[in-house]
Length: 106
Image (cartoon, rainbow, N blue to C red; front, side, top):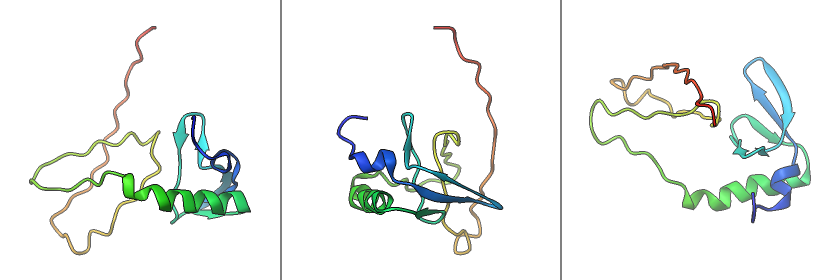
């Protein structure tokens, strides 16, 4: 991706995934992966990358639930995600639905 600091491509994180852990970068292919809850910076470039995401957070869009029954679809293959605690929202439901799409020939 053009304009992206070089350290985002090369900073190494220890990524905890439930019972497994692995090493990876925050940007691979054309996808970002960053979650401070499960990604521990392992080198100076990863620490710079963590700060980069803190700095650009102000440009992110936040989803606001304004109507009952709204649906938010997330491509789980593209997004490392976490959700906030639902303890203060006892009526909120989180449901996982899997869709498998056939790709069209190009």
